[in-house]
Image (tube, rainbow, N blue to C red; front, side):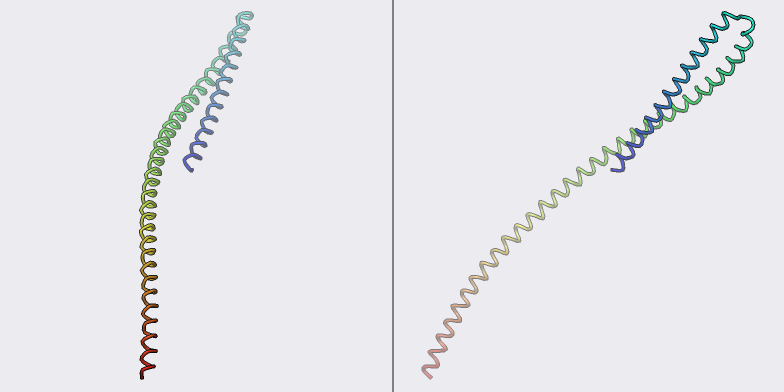
Length: 156
């Protein structure tokens, strides 16, 4: 059960990473739109905007480098998470195999226990039958003893 929770948690983390990645892509697309707008302005005001555009482009490049660095970290994290998920899948398979083995072993033990119970039940039945026979024989003997006793008393 803990493996399932861990797997769910990892999936949630992957979804978070994907959402972050999507946000970064949207930011990159927004930056791309801004760069296109700057190109239009450069075409209309060639000389005056050229110097401002260069400084703006440097800032954009720095931001893109930062984004690229963060994307690389995200890719590394996703790769690590995928490796962890693979390891978890292996552990889940091993756990399932262990549980199946335990269930089989337990079923065999329950079968043996039931067989022993049946043998004991049959043996107790045989003992009861023997006791009933012995009680019957005892009653016969007691009757015979009482009869002999009464005969001896009458003769004495």
